[in-house]
Length: 292
Image 1 (cartoon, one colour):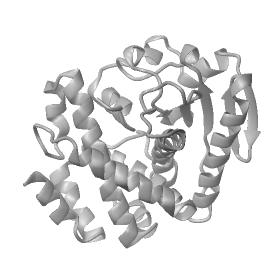
Image 2: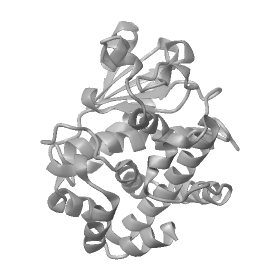
Image 3: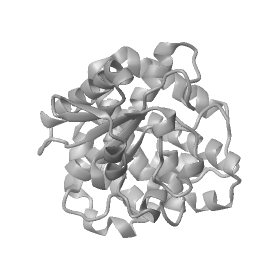
Image 4: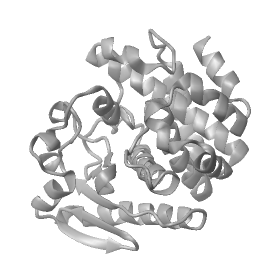
């Protein structure tokens, strides 16, 4: 397994029962505050970090602040979030089974508007090369994907109580859509490198079952689960990129205004795909080809 991809920990939560943080009756932001870290404000972002990681943490916060400003120009109200940049001894994962998860995959906790990012670029499951710039870019994109989960909640369905819909694949697609929209505007070279990596990872593995119905994930071994979820994540990354190139930010406005978010806990893939195809023609063909 090369690396576990963005959203894997969220998927574990979706298929799990409880969370380690919840089991302690402590919100993730309370755990971060208890670490007694340094903190600073960069634009609209408060970031927590160890003193030795200050420069790296401030750069990550500046990138998030750029993203907040980018979406503020297109949506309102402005995104609200904070970062925690942690070393392995401070690292924790609040999702079900998170105590056994390896170091280094950025994760978000939507109710706290918190994103946690690894401080180290020397160790971690996203540190796979071929060079340091690629490792940093990978960590940053997963961080921005997690920002996309916060953006989905705060900008698309702020009045709905739940953070996620019943369709994990759709939540992951939209989170990547936000991240991709930002990096496309900021650095097209980054976009090109990311797409090449996603395409390579999709081509390097074939899941035992190819379907937007992810209920079969429960029957997979941990190793196959990680590989399969990573494959789907990269496939959805490529789909988000293709959608953005055709529809831009207007796709996000369409789903914000026309989807029944209040009923999203009861969405089904068969019910949602035709609606998405009406909003962005070609969705049905993409889903049918995937199932085929």
